[in-house]
Length: 296
Image 1 (cartoon, rainbow, N blue to C red):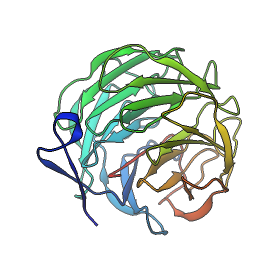
Image 2 (image 1 turned 45 degrees about the vertical axis):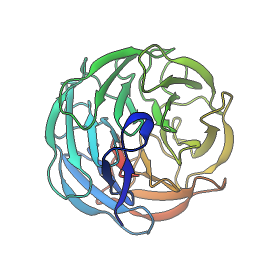
Image 3 (image 1 turned 30 degrees about the vertical axis):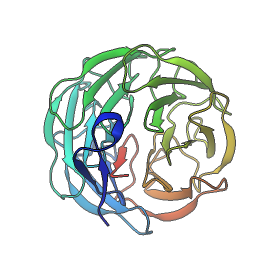
């Protein structure tokens, strides 16, 4: 099913952008070698992944976000080199990624989210506080946005549209901070996760953001109401305890794929309803340090 959104002043009126909402795309990671492949699922169904194409370079620990039509993958590492690479796919069209531009600084283990137009990248190795941004519909290099409240890597990000939140990570692993994506400036304290952890994955249904997994190889899922500052609340548990997984959503169902110790598991939750995750299907191979995004 093809969705669409209006764009223009205040998000209303103007042209429409196609959203391939039901499709979630996983890319990169590590599985005995650095992964170049992208693969997809239909989030509203259950089942195993299908081949989508390839990234421009094989890598682990990139991050990903989308404007609903175009998905972007940023950063990561291939052996020793840490990359500033940003590449993109058109979510509705199978095929290989295309060069987009560069991050302001090469880094891996970073996090990304968007407001449906602007994509922001935050944190990363080595314990970076950098936030930079792109306009997803327009190729080019990232621009400085501001800084996180705490420099860290292995964090996760999601949004309700206007507000982006970054949670967990190395250094102070319970920290949640937030930005207003349409403006620039430094992040502000939001609250804390229920458990200190890094290597966490996050997604949202708009109002509610969920954070799943993390060190030390945990199964915890907790949630926040993104519009309201405060600490996270227990949601349930993943089917398999893990860190370094990837998460995305179709706006209703959240999916978590892969993770360490090298699992091929995909499981899902209904974001509006707290509870434990259910089995969804499998990735093509066991891998960790991958990224995910969707047309949702």
